[in-house]
Amino acid sequence: MVEHQLRAQGIKDERVLAAMESVPRHLFVSPDLQAAAYDDRALPIGEGQTISQPYMVALMTGLLELKGDEKVLEVGTGSGYQAAVLSRLAAEVFTVERIDALASKARRMLKYLECSNVSVIVSDGTTGLPAHAPFDAIIVAAAAPHIPQAYIDQLKINGRLVIPVGSRFSQVLYKIKKTSDGITSSISTPCAFVPLIGKEGWDERESYEA
Image 1 (cartoon, rainbow, N blue to C red):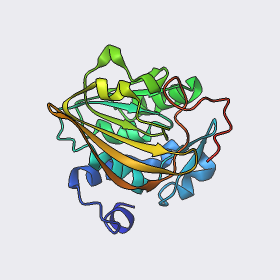
Image 2: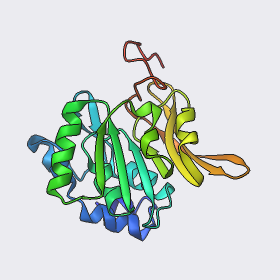
Image 3: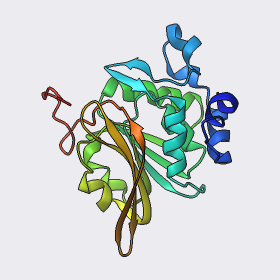
């Protein structure tokens, strides 16, 4: 996966590649999908959610520019795979999941893999995690209709936010940096994520028309 997919698609951050090489992705999917665990595609994990394709995990993680001493917030724990990768790259990781069943399963797997610097919290991730803010970096693994102000507020100066923004079925990946002079943003790539549901995201009852 690392050599033939990620490097081949232009992922160059050696720390990110090493982290992804060290995390057994097949453990984060159901037994019937383990044969496909290292394919470069998203896979279902139950509850209408997915584990992101390896390339997107690598791309988003690289955009955070982690050096090893950061406190990171992940919104959308899902299977816990992204959090496990982040655990190899940052000092402390807080990951928020709105679905209790997924959070419990992710918590068990992260404990099994000895990711002791990861805390899994069940909450509305669209409002961030103010009790543990500010963060050096925030990564959002779900599609937002707009960038929640809470994320900007909870970033440190020079902090980075990576988030897919757009319609229900088509988004663009944004990298936001908070500086002492304000906010800078850049667009990375088109993408498609499950919706970010909550107070500052999509309403779960909506039809999510594109």
